[in-house]
Image 1: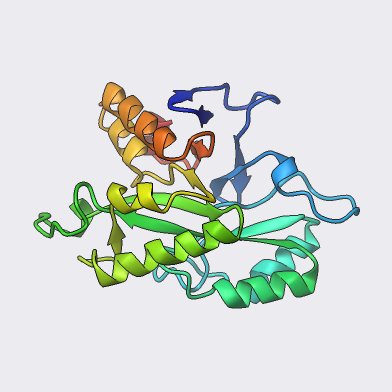
Image 2: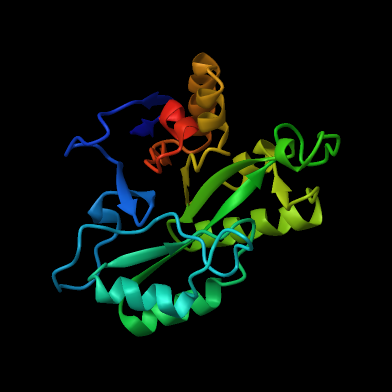
Length: 231
């Protein structure tokens, strides 16, 4: 599915014409953007690209080391691969250099933590209520600079259980970034799973307004009942 302009459009999950489709990644599905966004070189490439990936820099959630990730991408003929660790860009330089050395396109990103209201509000009942998730990918140098600003703000201003940003700074530093709705902890998926479909549509429209033409809905197939409800 994809969201364009200020109005999300919900396309068939497996339509050839869909701008984003669910793709299996081991036991966890990931999303794919149009190959025009990923074209590099002239060699024949796989049509599969990982855009939601956690490495050893995502504690308790990622296991693969960056070198192994890049090697696997090369082995499978992928033209590109993304890095979207939780709340940090600690692996960005290593990732960029190893991808460049291997001849594939590095897509630097981050799965940021988003405060439900203000990043300065620190009255959540616990870690589970303190933030939503949102995946951000850099389109260009401006996007890299803006993502660096957002991640830094999360640590310097919004840290509460985790480094959090909010929609205020997201609007200010959205240029050059592609956004994806993330996992079950994403705001849209959480609202869908809770049965609040109209609120989920409103939230998706809000993100589509912040990222016009650059906001995508992730659909995952991981055998979790709550994921099926969210999908």
